[in-house]
Length: 240
Image (cartoon, rainbow, N blue to C red; front, side, top):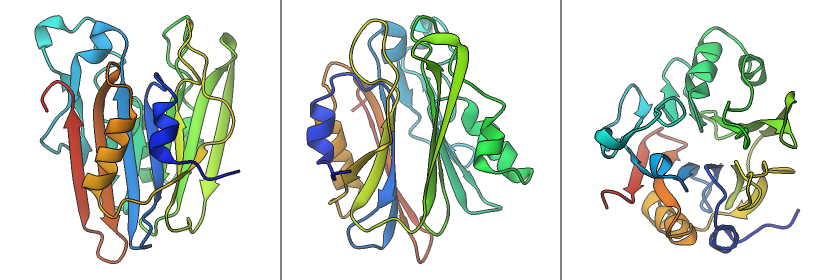
């Protein structure tokens, strides 16, 4: 698999939906997390990442509460840190809590997600994408999706990455392309370059690569692998 230029890849996809990037900085000193939200509907676009950390992570919230139509698939914790293990969970839905609770119960990543499937939003049946970053920088990604839009079959894919290479990441997102209904992501997580030396630089690269009309929010975190200290950047279209 060829390594892709991250910004060019995002620029070529006007609506990848929600996306998770996990990897390692080029200097081999930091684990890297990025999570972005895009939206086509007014309800999807009416949200932000809360600028105040909450419950060892971040939370989505309505930008204008009076315009919120259905919070069930909109409001959730995309990122949670598990202090007991040093793991960080990042997902595109409330399965963040499912993974966290499972890890605390001694379950493996895949075992915890066995209780979940794609989102109940026909006709798209949006995939649930999830990531688990360990304190040593190794990580796993998962996608739970319908069988090419058929909700009778739930497909489960899990990908593990031990000792990630410096300057590389893996990107997974919900939608393959911008069609109606939206087709689910296909294949392995994309191998992309991470050249940014800090969270702010990577955030700028991702944000400017995302379609200006559809981008909603972005979270980027760099975690020092030696000290565990994290540096975060949040960008919200509705507030920045």
